[in-house]
Image (cartoon, rainbow, N blue to C red; front, side, top):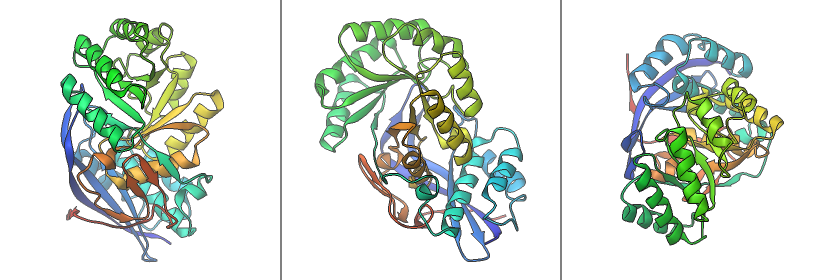
Length: 365
């Protein structure tokens, strides 16, 4: 099985409701779809979400990176040589992690198809069923409470609450949701780099004094503020999760050495694909640091790959935040991975089990 062509397209799926964080507001999942074709007729699917405020990638930069740097080095290469192909992708250019992720996802999809098995089985096996949390976007207190109660009705048992706009309002939001949920779901707090280290400590001390048991506090300070994360870790009881501060294995090691995070959030768009995500999970497992598997605003193409990873590395990845498909108005993928609100089930199809992606606008030239 050799690579013969790499096709690119644009996919846009409206969200059920706008997604709001301290950094941005999004009303649709928009991504670059990658299809790698082979001489055997097999096709591998990948996807890149443009998140300029986090990874620095835009749709234009993703397309250019793949066309000009990543695709040329892969044509005529054998799919069986996966490790070498991933090394070529990672070494073809600096950064551009979303573009690399899309190509790597498609490569892993093809590699698993070559061996006739679901990807998670080849990565180590596991139970092909996950439960994800769902994001409660930052909004008015009443709206966030209503969204939280609606999520409970849909079967969610973990809520990720977005804050980071105004710290007084943030505290009021969390208190109101905690009262409304009344212990029926675990609460995860995501400040999206919206606080300073001192604000985070002050806010968490107030919430902890109220007896509000939060499962974690995610990325309260700017991505580069590792000292701030360490400051917070040493002063609050709630575990601190590093998201934007933990792009890949090297940053994971730095955070461990500086005791600046209790948990890592692994996202394929940050790590540049599955190869570095696997390394990051293995590093965390060796050091006893639990991980969350997360996603950007992505569809079930790339989120399926993240789900396969989470199943295969369940020893390290105990927290699941793969609600991208649940936020979408519809699933554009015909495949064997099912996203049913809080429950994700991986089928028996080879690779990622993707048969077709509907609504792709293919790019030419």
